[in-house]
Image (cartoon, rainbow over all chains, first blue to last red):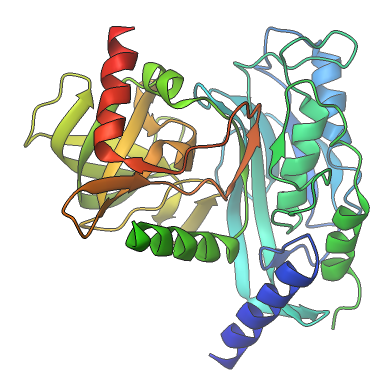
Length: 198
Length: 175
């Protein structure tokens, strides 16, 4: 109970004092945080399969703990021992979904005063019904790299930020290609859970 | 109205304690009704976890329908739709940004058909809690905090009187 109170208390302090917020989970090792991409069933418009792949994967690299582990034929949001990125039909207005498949709350770390549990599996899906576009051709579409970077921010343990312009700010305009680059607030949030832990 | 404001504030605080997200396209109210196959008001009668056709864990929400704002569902019918995630066979899947339900909740849901399964439009975007005001009227309220919104063109609607939702639905359907 004390642990819960400590967690909630520090979480609130963190949220108010800085722009970023945390979701109480993190990867304990980089080996756990390898993501495998299934790039089949990608959208017909407007990126090539190679562009789709590179833009999704570019969303992983800014978050140091996470990496691309290779390709996979698995898909969806299922517990299968692999962190899977895949395409799917997600509905009329859902662009990407992050699924926490496994969290081991019996394993925790205290990082800068925040009690954080261990992620064991996370799957991310993108909607293949949307027009993902490049900055040079964008008219009314969306930046896959930007949405990917945002989703992987959640996949490494960050919540939303109230700093406008941060990758983890919960709103972005069509054809806005700025969010794929981390802002100082995103870096501070990441550091707060991956540095200074015991 | 004060009660609604306080409940809204409480919802924001609670949402802040679990800040996570999924990315959805913001669509204005009328458009969101047009994108919905059903808009139903009712009580959550039963929740059960199961696997969908893709083998993913979902929660089947059984809604005892009180009123249909869109779609041919009669009062008293039970309509079953899916919420992503849930707990089954020792596995707990949490789909961030998905709406949460509790038995007995009175909700208004905007539902779309995704490959033969009905889901709320944009996860928690399409789920509204029904609140009874002191004067006896009802309002609906939703939390967008867990969602990463793309393409916002107006101040997002998070609360409105139920009668106004009925008007918007009528207009959207007749448009």
